[in-house]
Image (cartoon, rainbow over the protein chains, first blue to last red):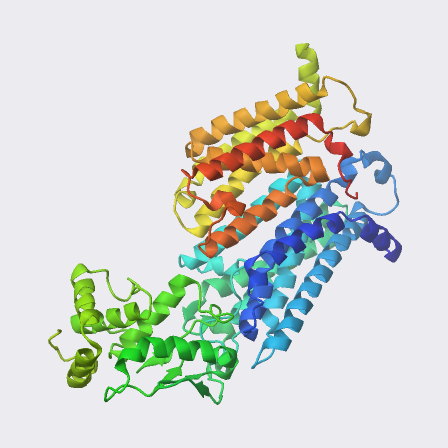
Length: 439
Length: 188
C-alpha cells in the first residue's frame, strides 16, 4: 500500500459527507446533554466510549459502500490486470475510512475532554474507554468493508449499518440481563461507574473488549487478504484474530461483577480494589452534607435537597447532624449514595432518580439502612418526609400501600407542634426499629 | 402504461432483490419477537431498527443505474408503482410478522428514508433515519417523549400516527417527482 494511493483514497472516501450526520446526532444526543457544568472524569470518559454507537454504524455502512466500489463501477476486469494484489488496493481504501473514523473520534474525545477539564473538580481523564472505543471503531470499519467486498450490492451498506447497531444494542441488553458475553458489546462501559470516584479505575473489562475488537478486526482483514490473493498473510491474520477473540471470550466468560465493576480474575490487580483517599467537601445547614470533592459543584443542590427532606426533623434530639456521601457498598448510617453518572447541573434528575434518592435519604433518616426492610412506622414517616418535600415515595423502597399513604396523610395533617412533639418522644425508638404508635 | 415498461423499470431497481430482503426482514421481525415485544429500551429500539431496515431496503432500491440520463414523463408513475408496491409488500409481511403496531413506524421511517434519498442520494438514504432512531433510543432511555421523536410515543397516539402518515405521503410524492441521482452528490 503506497502513500500516494492512501492520499487518493482519503480524498475519495465517502466518510466525509456522512460525518456531519454523526456530528449532528452527537450534538442532540444525551452525550451532549451530559456536558452540563458538573463533570466527573469516569462518567465523561465512559460517554466517550458510548459515542461509538453514534459513529460505529455509520463507519461500518460507509466502509461497506467503499468495499463494493469496484463491483459497483464495473472495474473488475480493469483492476484485475494490475500488477499489485487486490488486497493492496482494498487495504488502502479501508485504511482511508478507518483513519478518517479514528481522527473524527479523536476530535470528539478531545472536545469532550477539554470541556471536562474546564469543569471537573477532581480526577483525571480515564484512557480505557477511549481505547476501547478506538478499537471498536476499527473493528466496525473493517467488518463493514469486508461485508462490502464479500457481498457487493446496494443493500449491503444500510443493512450492515443497521445490523451492527442492532447487534451492539442486543449485546448490551444481554449484558444487562446477566450474560457475561454481552459485556463485550462496544457500548457496555469498560469501567465500573458505581464507585469509580471512590476507588481506583479497574481496567479488566477494557482489556478484554480491546482484545476482542482487535481480534475481530484481524479476522476481517484476514478474510480480505485471503480473498485478495495474499493467502499466507491472510492465514496468519486469521489465526492471530482467532487467538485474540478466543482469549477475549475466555476472559469475558470468567468475569464477574462486584460493586466496583467487572472483575476478570486473570487480569485482576489488587491495587484497583483499594479506595482512593480524599477529603470530603461539606456544606448545607442544619444538616451538613459532605460529598466527595468530585461532586463539590453539586454541594449546594444536594444540601438544599437533603435539608428539605429533613426539615420536619429540625431540633429533634438524635437527628443526624451530618450526611456523608459514600459508595453503595459502605452504607451503614444516614448516607447519601449517588450513582455518579446521573446528577448534572442545578437539579437532580431524571425524576425517577430524584424520587429514589429522596426515598433512600428519608428512610435513612428514620433509621432504615440499605439491605434492611423498613418497618411499618418507618415507612409511614419516610413517606411523609418525601411527600412534604414535594415528591412521592419510590415504590421500590416503600411499597405503594393505601394504609401507609393514609397514615402519612394523618401525620401530615398534624400541627407542626404536635408533629415535633411526636418526633421528640418517638424518634429514638423509630430509628432503633422499635415499634411505635403512630398518630 | 405497458407492463413491459413497468417490469423493466422494476428490474433496473433490483426490485426482486428488495422484495426478498423485505420478506427476510419480516421473518427476522417474527423470529425476534421474544426480544422486541417488551417495553424495555433495547426491545423498542430493536423493533425500530428492524422496521427501519425494511424502509432502508426500499430506499436503497431507488438507486438508478442511468443517473441523470434517465428522463421521461412516465418516471413519476413508475417510481410511485415501485416504491408504493414495495411498501405495500413490506407493510403486509411486517404486519403478519409483528402485528399492525409496526405499521405506523414503518410508514414514517419509510417516508423519512425516501426524503433522505431525495436530499442526499439513495445510496446514503439510511444515514439520517438511522441517526434518528438512535436519537429516539436516547429519548426512550431517558424516558422522555416528544413529537420530535414520534416513534417513542405510544402506538395509539393519533399525533404520532398523523406525523408518520404525513412523512410517508411527502416521502412518496417527493421521491416520485425527484430523481435521487440529482440529489447532493456524495463522493465515491
